[in-house]
Length: 213
Image (cartoon, rainbow, N blue to C red; front, top):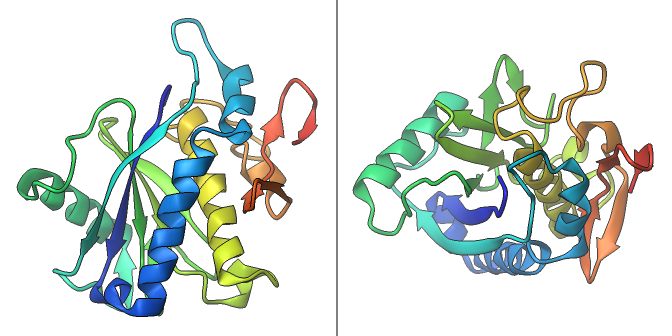
């Protein structure tokens, strides 16, 4: 994704509650800042002929209250939601080669993908639908396995930055930058963080430096 355009999706009526509404506002502000920051600039080392990674932007947000997510949803349900909203909702932008839909799940809702489950096996993931719709899924950081001693805010920006950078450099998992032993650039540096401005972000692997930066 050369100049990523993030559209945030907050799924569930719980995002309309004051505390969660504040969190959603914070996450949108996070993307507004991070998409133009040094975190994105450092990814330029992964440019390939004809494709250069540059600054991105957030192009919008939407809170989807219907259908209500079950307490445990599958990746197929997320895909269905995105395809339905893209087709029927005027609030959703049409997908482009740069669009990344970032879906946030409400507190108490887990997601399963590929036989694995959030909080037990992962804290977020990204994928694609037919190489045309790029998306990331962010469960609410409400378990020890996904907060790791961090606040909910810092845990969620850390995971969001992890999946953002991986989606940019490996939009179709395994067809972009991927290490057969260690995975994507965020996987190699999992649980190593730094601050960009006031935001907690995850370090990402640098081929040039041979380290997490």
